[in-house]
Length: 167
Image 1 (cartoon, helix red, strand yellow):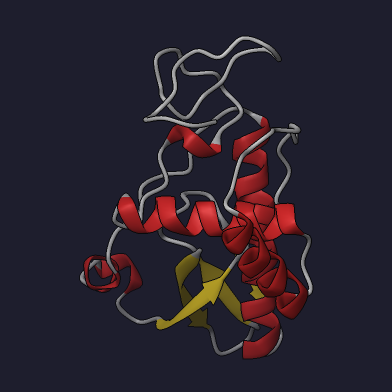
Image 2 (cartoon, rainbow, N blue to C red; image 1 turned 180 degrees about the vertical axis):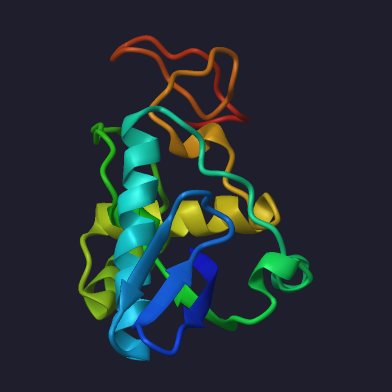
């Protein structure tokens, strides 16, 4: 997931970083590279905290909307990528059915990307959800149960709702 950050530099200090899409998320660094890496770590930590607390990830605004905000007028903008599929959330073993050809393609991609099959599928699913929700990831990324949602399942052996056919 890509996050816009705004970097500020005061004459007598290092670089300060604000993440406008995540209120309360900020970081700093002595160099621009350190500031950007620190921002990546702060974003991951902030999102992990939201997930652990069962809170949704806030909706993101466009870069243009952020740039129009007077609070960030003097900053330098950058985009950092955070792989949210690697953040904490309880894992659950599931059983899915895929055509052999699709499974072979997935396995080849997983080997190429040096990931597990599960990791690749989780990343692909999150990427799809992000694109379909136009950049916002609703509560689908929280650990909170949401009755009536087709992407949620109950305790093992109890399926709440299924979207379409299949598993």
